[in-house]
Length: 459
Image (cartoon, helix red, strand yellow):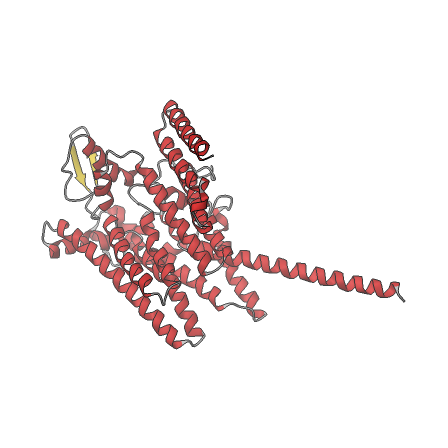
């Protein structure tokens, strides 16, 4: 029986290779081989728990859609999305393939194949470029990004189910699966999307293990490493990533305070504080490495250059007169205007839900809160989650105001760091509760009518 299983798997792989060779699509071949390998694990599922199989299945489904965009044909920006940013990675890879080993101290750069020169991208350390350049001979690099992103997101769904409930986990999964923004970023070599989500994953794991010192220490170490790596790959969206990391513990903290569990609140506060300190230290460690290169060995000069040329241009406090005219409008634009702009989606929220409905999706939970408050059934946790995740998602629109104004073709992805999910969750749960109430009412009404009929029959 095992021989038949293994022979079937081998024949399937060989068929996939021959087919993909025929259609000249190597990346599809690699993806099929990956799916086959994972499928083999499921085929021999006796060695794995049901939980592992669920994570594997979610990873497979997410990977499939991230690779092919098969579930949302209206997502016309999938192919070629952020190709200009990715060229900073493929540039150093192509240079290495052409025999140019020294592409500069930075990891990213634009490659001029005609003149055999690389123009370094100095706005970040460029760790992803250094890693992919070292792996220049490895095919299917996009598959690596796709799989890692899918795996991390699947783990987030899993721990959300453990922390809260299956409905909330479903909202996270369906959003990750069908969001055109999550899908578009997943394969990009420059953005390496999985680095965005690891801190949030670790934060949720910590919220499940406040009293387990071994897990806490491991997660603290993971936070430092993950934030350090993300910062070395680029500083974009860091406010959202770090706030998402502490979002669930902060929700727990506020709940504990509301219930007057002060000892528990102090314990959670200490953990959240330590998480924040580790994240800040990791950020500054990466910044110092970047500044050392930027200042040609002079860290102070490098920090000054980064602040003057990058921080002020992308965030708050910049003087438009000191930058090219192309940045003038973004620097002078008020924060309120930027936040207002991002409430008008230019794409679908998820496949099948038009972007014009985003504002309704965002407002309906508030109406639900008002409705439940009238009947004194308002859940404190729902209100906290809604406002915490809203603050998480808009933080970059505020701190990275200029960047957000200029990059409206990509920063809508920030809404998916919990806010869209919690809106779906509150709306769906209210619909389910109303459905149950109506069903119960009709059933009770039917029973009463039946009893009255029976009484009349026996009169």
